[in-house]
Image (cartoon, rainbow, N blue to C red):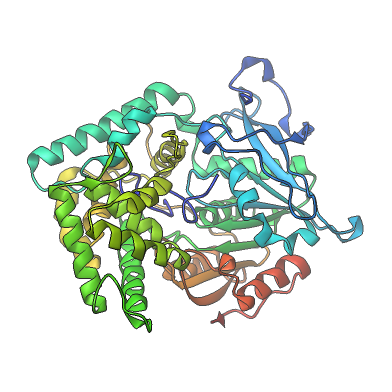
Length: 514
């Protein structure tokens, strides 16, 4: 199930991840090739292309560690492993340690689904320098993402309209417009990317991971999965339990939930984050500029969104800030406590008629750069989520479920409920109700849950531990705020994770970090 938000409400990974050659596409000339025997040609990384979010080539790390990129061939259809191939883009930086201390490659997936690992790893790499003492740090654009045969749906102008429209219909006319827009988006995906759509399931990506392990020369997969990356890691462990090396799951997706249950859980999670944000604002010694009490803060936000539903305000010229865009911007800021001050400023400005900060946050969530170009995160999120998730939800069903979603979150319930229609008329059937991550016999997997995580609620960590099976999942709790735990820089969390990945020391199950 998707670890983050339905694309209408918002999209993407770890606080909406920051960050030209055309990759090898599908071709008949590779038929019969044994892709496990390929040798990667590592070169200096090009600047990210539009599908990856654009920007400059990754800068060397402070110790002059150079980033290298390569293209790995993988079967388009794992059911026909010697048929047509696609190119998967990889990035790495070599270990700083001595060769006799090197464990292997540590492969990261930062979430989504739909996030570009090729742009994310350089953006966050300084936070993983300790791990680089014994590993080459590696990440990749999963199939359908970034430079790896990206799913393409609508153009930039169409996406502007898509993310601006009313995602929480109040009457029959608004509902019809929302359904029509969703159908148009999904039809565009099929028209522009129909060949790849049946082959972007998480099981396909897990098989790509095992191919990557082999091509990189590792006997076991050493892995760091964050958010959706925990689901991918769990599916890998299920398919290849004997090949699991040292693995960490952080910001854990509940593998027992279907798409509806996941959306409802997120409604509760983001409401909790909003409650914590409001309490934090009014608890400071200085006066909270957006409310006299925590309830007042939330009431004023609700009134703002109601007002925007009737009359948008100035956003980032020439666009206006709509209710939907403002909701996405607020959700984006709730991913990290580091953004709470930014959210306070944005709300204060919006109350004075200036929606530029909230729109900037919304653009970040939706993968829009300052030049108006979108990465392909929204398209990839939809394609992977819909290929994975079997349930399809009609508008009438969503309307019946609205009361429970509103009870879970008066502010975000409608948006998250209506996001469930995104797969209703998708061209490819969904694979299952929820992923299978049972992995009897696998090496220990450290599963880290954050009690204040809005996007992957804390309960998912225990569910993942139980689903992996006895002796596999080892639960660690972080009592904190935001999406994920390791990047919080909490010494207890980082000490436990580093101790396992670097030295193989499994912390006691049930360890709690504060």
